[in-house]
Figure 1 (cartoon, each protein chain N blue to C red):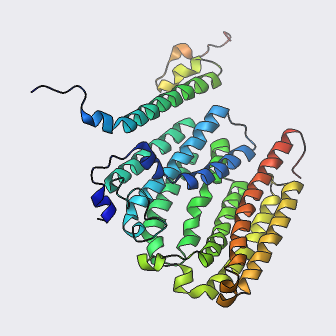
Figure 2: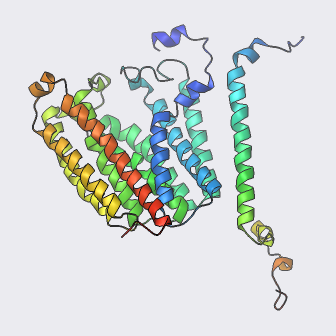
Figure 3: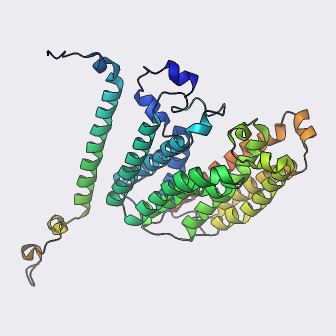
Length: 310
Length: 66
């Protein structure tokens, strides 16, 4: 038990502490991508059903965050960034996080099945399982490729949103999944290159620490190159269109240029300009994802007026 | 043993209790809303009776009646 939790043994957790278990910032990205997946689908959804669907996806994602915090409490308290989370700081008991995570998972999956369809609910169940069990319990502590495979958990929401509307899986929803899936590694490794992490102290294998920063720079470039055909391919499907394609071409060139810049640098250059290029590429990666999904949304809005699409 | 009506735990857990109250009310609202939307979407209200998984001859339209 940490010092803080000893001091605060009489502390009474409030709703904010429990809400923090749900990782609200991750949740906001989940809500955005799931909403786009739902809105770009060719089948109209009743607004209230759509709202409940997105809510269930968000709560399910939050529940998997709580389960992750329950499992990772031991390593969270060793790292500066995560030491203030509710469990390592002693505000919430581990058992409470486990209970909340399991209960909310159950509610979210059952309600999504009742409100929409079983495929969407199954995908949500698999996402929670994948993040809490496959990523948190196995991948995270065993392989530096944890972020590559684990990224699948963050890539499912638009696919679930699409399933809420259509009740199915299609090339469009698979490519939306692939876009986030392929985007996660270069996005995360760009961050890992400039953030002084203490993953090593917690025994979590990170590519920057297991294989070195040069390998990580090469990996950023390789994964960014692999990302380009996915992003452009999505533009050729029924949810793409000239506007999306224009945005995709610009954003991919921008991201690719950043990845090439990173791959040409060494530690001395990074120290010299205080990781300016890496920080910049990390920001570009955020714009990249938002721009692609906003462009999909815009194409869907244009289609309402008979415009957009091919 | 006399029970204190206002126990100190009430004050300590006030935030949490109100939070749970709000969440439960939201849950009731969502289930009610879903019910209303789903029933309206059926169009023909008789279909609602058909969801109890039991054969109901009286709700099956007769030939020539419709």
